[in-house]
Image (tube, rainbow, N blue to C red):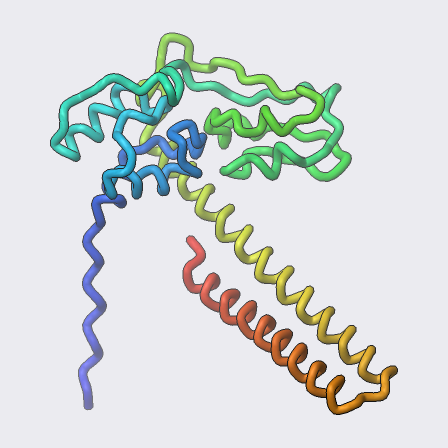
Length: 237
């Protein structure tokens, strides 16, 4: 009887992983990248400097400099300025329920539905302010909630870890919704093609074209199915 196989050894964290662990996970994009992970990868690749994160502030630069074995340098003002942690606040009397802020929030910290009043879940808000610009009625303001405290004095590692988890869950959900929508559209196209075929006498040319389109649709449905299966295995718990 064969002995059970030993569990696979854990993969050692990459430099990008270690850099990401030191970022505040506000996902604010002020660094010039789409989120903390892309910024970490850019630092690891040498295409970005380690002083582009305003939420991390000078303490964040110190952390990264220590990891990278580089000198501590000032925050790049092009990316913004260090300051107190902020909280998004919605003027509920002005909110029209457009959902644009919900779509912009990288950590699902806004609660609401179409044509219904939205509200911020204060404990989840990272202060990224990405919800402000899309609002068509300017009903969102950013308020300082840690006066006198900035960087890692205003934000804990536990909060950063929780924000990263919510960001990852949101990314997985959006990917799953896209795959489901792609599959739904492909199935709808297949049904429509079948309906047209039933109503139209098929010449050899039309039959060949129908078969070509059906093969494309079948392949699209199968790709969507495989992606859905893969995302189930990769989705954070």
